[in-house]
Length: 562
Ligand SMILES: *[C@@H]1O[C@H](CO)[C@@H](O)[C@H](O)[C@H]1NC(C)=O
Ligand SMILES: *[C@@H]1O[C@H](CO)[C@@H](O)[C@H](O)[C@H]1NC(C)=O
Ligand SMILES: *[C@@H]1O[C@H](CO)[C@@H](O)[C@H](O)[C@H]1NC(C)=O
Image (cartoon, rainbow, N blue to C red; front, top):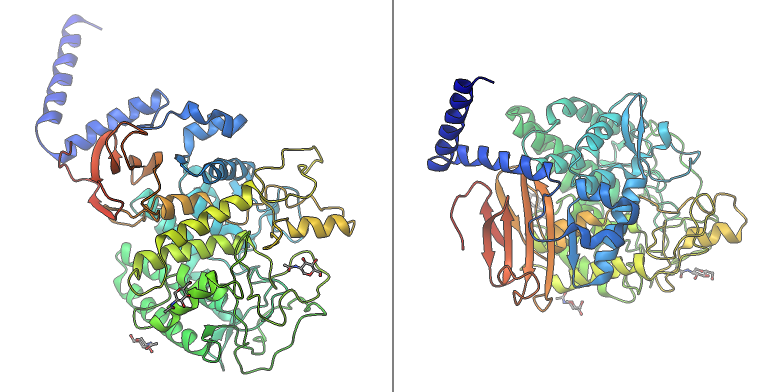
């Protein structure tokens, strides 16, 4: 380079730096971007935590994790341990195939009811919710596109794909992939309507197995879950259309979704037990064959709502925000979660009420929904309860301490449960903790399907090793830490943590292009960065409160805090 060129470059650089430091927010964000880029080159998005401190928890996954996952720690060692374990489990299920790129599996070994590449759509909503926090966005870009291929088995099980894809865009910021995905999602929803809508009754019908709840007490019919999930899909489609400026389409779909919501909440309500339940109806002729019921399963008359309380009545409507402000009579259903004769149990919420005469009916099958606790369901229930505490805090008889205790219990199902013959899929012995399989005995804490299959000499009894059919890390981020993702630039942080808890920290979290750290330090001694609840964005203190409380701040706000 000639000397004059060098001078000229230096001068241009100097002017650029000056411009940046003087005026507008855009320039600030440009220099932030540059700073982030340099920081990323050095391998660090960390503002509070030292990633090296988590080497032991992550083992061989540490390097991968440091480059792509947000790091977290809390005073509760079980929650911390389960958090990193779940990212390690997630990583095991990320597979790459040249034709389609990345996909995520539910079982590690091939199972004969899976679709192409051992994929199963039942878990896809959970996969996308959990994986939306990965920096490496190619993984879920590929996987989202995968489900809209005509040969993917997209309607084999009820699934909340559109809702999850929107939830992911809310983390990434902007319209990430939505324009591309929307037409396929609309087609998918309309295909569900064509196959599963019961005209006479006015509701969606599903076999319980196809609805992700096989051998349940209420069985097949117009189940709360498929109706809430379809409401969630149509609402997500409407909100995507709104974001894309398709206002007329959006308004039409919102109206249709509201009708669906009002008629389902009316039809599925059983006043005798004050609960939502399964309305028994004949399947529409367009619906494919469903598997037969287990011999010990009860039969119920048609044209009525089955009088049994099942946790799907809470987990799905509240997960998809299907409960309108004027339906406050539904909130009392939550009391069952802490009732020993309802769902409350030592190792996780039961999927059916303990007091039912059909609880744990005889069934010669490893996977039943007549009582055992299913992480698939527990994770939805915990997310649903976080929605309740965020949207109806005054109307509901629940505190954030109850939420936190449910979350801690879920963590302990990972860290203190009783795995049966701990070995991986190849048969190699592995440490017994942490552990995640299909369903856990709610009173005894062992993993039911694995135990059953081993006792019955079934060859694939190891298939539930590192089973990925639920979320955990997403609940930590959106519930415990309380980052509530949204499309606009308002950052909402509302931790569901009792304020006698001393500390937690979430760091290296990529949200709307900002590197965030969210820290609770009651005394300020743990991290030495000030006491209270603090949020840093790209090294800048964005918000702080001495008390544990909801924080709201615009990501682009330039107010200087000290
Ligand atoms: C709530 O209001 C909607 C109209 O916005 C109505 O259709 C619905 O029936 C009401 N639900 C209840 C439980 O009152
Ligand atoms: C269901 O019944 C079986 C057989 O009596 C028993 O071993 C098991 O612990 C029961 N399961 C639950 C969840 O209560
Ligand atoms: C509130 O919850 C407690 C404990 O879960 C329960 O005993 C009580 O009946 C509930 N009250 C109402 C009004 O639902």
